[in-house]
Length: 288
Image (tube, rainbow, N blue to C red; front, side, top):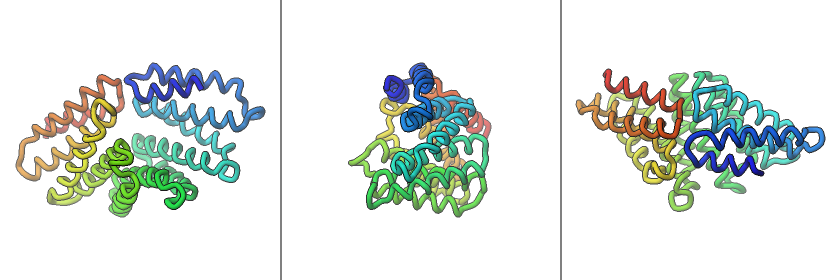
């Protein structure tokens, strides 16, 4: 329980100190919560461990944290089976899918992405729209993310079209009035998918739609409320604005301003992996 409190605080605060402390506390608990004596509590401890490792992995460039997180969720799923605990099984599938998707993007591995998609589709067997509409919508959003990345890696349009459809499905349940932060995340994801569409077209229509969605996202994902996500939106916006500028004969200054905003926040919150990527984007904008 102490670890879960640290984990919640660590997700909301800058840096990784509380997340590291949560990881240590969970490992200490698991020394006593053995699978043989307390299988359910052990599995839940593995879920907490996987969550802490996932957040640490997302904030750093060290993929071993993500790989360890995946191992923790897979271990938990051996106990939290669909037959025994269907809802916890489905949530573990979602966590596993998120980790596989993040690792796949970093390693550019389509097999991991397909495994992530399979995990999300498995979760949808329990999280139906009729019985659990919000959970259903959240999984649709996660599935859309994986399909977007798959489209980027494969260079195909089929997964991209499917991802845009899943985002629109999700937005039917995740409205701004009901869940403003999650609505903002969906706007971000949809904007990113539209950006990929725009990159493959000759005009700027899809790119401008993408920029509009990204700007909408920042109305809820503000720097104060969600600094990491706000900075990620700014980085995506910078790429989008660069493409618009190049195709319209405009200056790249707005794109440079957006990526500089992102870099400042990534540096402040010590999001190493994102900082490295943002600095690459900045060099690309200046070098173009």
